[in-house]
Image 1: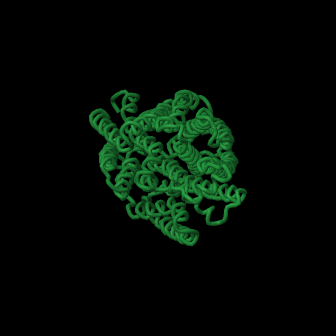
Image 2 (image 1 turned 180 degrees about the horizontal axis):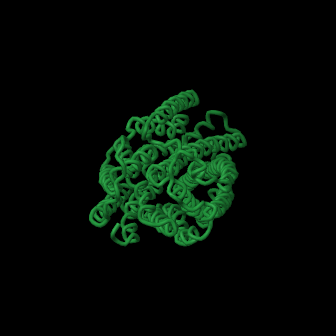
Image 3 (image 1 turned 90 degrees about the horizontal axis):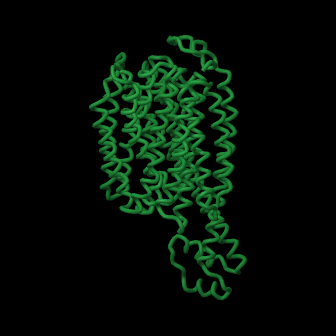
Length: 523
């Protein structure tokens, strides 16, 4: 690399910017896209499912491809696909074409993210990688932080399709700059790529992430059938990986504490972040006193908080053991979840934004510190595949947080609403048919004249009745999702203690040749 490495990294990070900006654009747009296509809250996760599944399953494959043919070519290909995918979403007349665009968005992301991540050890020596990671995270959070507010403003002014027109334009600019300025990276040894394994893994992840949607639409029987298919496909995939010389997922890397523990931690953190973000986005979009711009601010505050602390985190990573930052991030996450449990329909926008601030701090601290651990704890000739594997787990938490999180929230609010209405109807002396009319009135917006007459006799306004029941249902959804997140987060806090006992890399995998690197506990 003959040019200034910081300048090269800054240009490369434009690729990360456009990929993550697109994700941030989609979050506040999801309730409006769902309404446009007639999709329920519990099923809204389908809008991001294919993009996430493709990004998850293909990141290791394309990370290895970058190791072999050079990272720049792979990144440029990803940006070309990204422009096409976002353009398709702009003009789609039907949800099916939107989903095709989402699928190719995920392919583009998988080409871009792990290869830009893997440029860091190629551009910088170990003692400067902390600052480079800090800059990397800063760009990530600028993209995701500004994306929510920009998306909200665009939706409020021109509708949700304008969001993807802007995203396609940003992607085209990044494509031009990276093509012209970034030099080619070094090429590694050519080897076969595991396309068969990647295809099976993509199918497995798609079904896995879609299990909550299968349950909410078809019931327990189909859920068990889908789970069985996932188990069979995953077993078959793992058997293939053992036989492949150059597998999609290097199972030896997953034996390293410095790889598998960070991977689990980042997946769970992203589940927590997305489930809280999406549930609060739907809560706010259902509040008639809030507009789309204010809904977008939920995403903006989450990632702006992370953006602001990123430079400081990069500074700390070069001076202190990254494990300490892991524990600080987990504490921040637990505080955020506890505050989330206090949110309801009467909560102020400020209290919602404070929750997102703690979640954003957790995300920034954990992402950066785990990236430092993974980069320093991987053989030099496997940086691409190891960062791709980490990216796989990182991204796995996002669609599960979206699909499973929204399914839990949607089903809990639906059942909570039915329960609240039934209780109120019983207190008013309504029969079963009249109670059913009340429940249907929420979805249809139409109130039978007979029911209005009955309620007017007891001086009850149906709008007040539905509003109070809706408030109770939201509280039920928040409580269920919050408790699940709290229990799981406490679990990964216990798991993270294993990072304190990591052995040198050569002791973890004796048959892997590794260039000399400083021990992690001296970082």
